[in-house]
Length: 583
Ligand code: PEP
Ligand code: MG
Image (tube, rainbow, N blue to C red; front, side, top):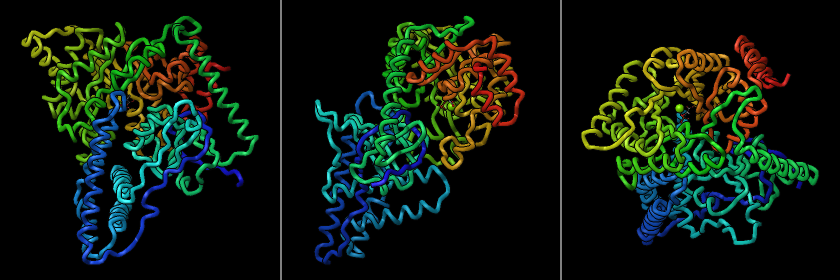
């Protein structure tokens, strides 16, 4: 077969080379036949039994979630359990069997198709994602009905053939992704999904090259085809020629060599050529991520996203983590970091991180009751978290970071609640660090333009560029249709960043960046030239950023970046950033 190339969205970096393992949707090959009247009730029961089996499977998946699995996986399982209980799935197909005498598979597929068509009419991207969830639930039930097991090859001891398999699917449900943890696949390719889809999040957390949103990859690619997955470019090459294969094998080997070379920098202090020390910190989702932060040479945690401890808890367990449970997690993080500071961000729930996905009702969640807005509306929940964090501060250096602040009264209310939490702990004779530092995320343009409000009351600032870009450019960060407008180098974004860094420096209030920009080595020199001295990022990015710092000269960069800030032409900015420090 001739070689051909497919293009999609790069979501997880690296190169994978291997044979295609197609995961066919069960819906494609269901049988269609009519049931004689006297057997209709037996057919109804067959479907009911299959639904009950899937309930049981989901519960088992939930209870067997590995401790170190990304917390959002629990949330995905919950969503599927709720969909499965909905009358649209649990009852309507039974009626179709009774009234039209369809066999169970046909009845189920008919209803799933009907629901999918209804979802196609809706523009809302959040609801579009629910369509994929419904289809995935339908496929689970079909698998039980047709008796087809998941057919995933299990990794066998010394045989590493499986490691060179690349999963190709129309879609992969996050719950199914769980199974890939134990089966070392080399890469993922799917027809649907975007940069921030659930599948993308999990692929990145597994650190496996992945290209999503490839439209028809699962129909164009055949079982056992040779594939090259280029997770950097978002390209999949099917049946590559020997020359192309050799080139990619060389690139793959080069990536391994680069990783090895970078590993030598682990203990090297992050100091620029002209002698300025830069702090490189880690972003984590769970306390279990601390060892990889230390391993990468981070000098502390710059962002602990605590919402992952809360997500997916509204389902089977029906409760949020208690003060003690949270305290244990925060203490575990601070102890793991062995005296290095841990910046704990209070709950940033809402938008694309709903507490309970099934309950998400906001019309425009990114602009709705999110982060600190949510916490101030639920003061008991917020106080519980504040007490837990304060209690953990007796065991090591902790800083408290507040997301999404924009209004002076929000700052005041937050600080009052922190005082109240301290008072409650004093009354309960609990120890905490009385001088605990409190900082604000600068991630709404309104905050970046009213910094005097913040530097007066806050001990430090941390710029959340992911949201700052979203809110400055009015581009939903999870919507693939406007992904091309999401530009970190837009002059408006650069000005807000520079303003925040400069005001912080003038006021003596430390400023960090903890959004994705901090971990992009192509932007390191730009941020250094703006005056940034604290970068917080995913541990896997730390060494590449450090390498940039070691090769940078602030004396040269500062005037070059000043010039960029006077430029408004996007192409000129991009080119000048590329050439920073290289002229
Ligand atoms: C950000 O907005 O840049 C950030 C770091 O927070 P999150 O990505 O969790 O919204
Ligand atoms: Mg944010």
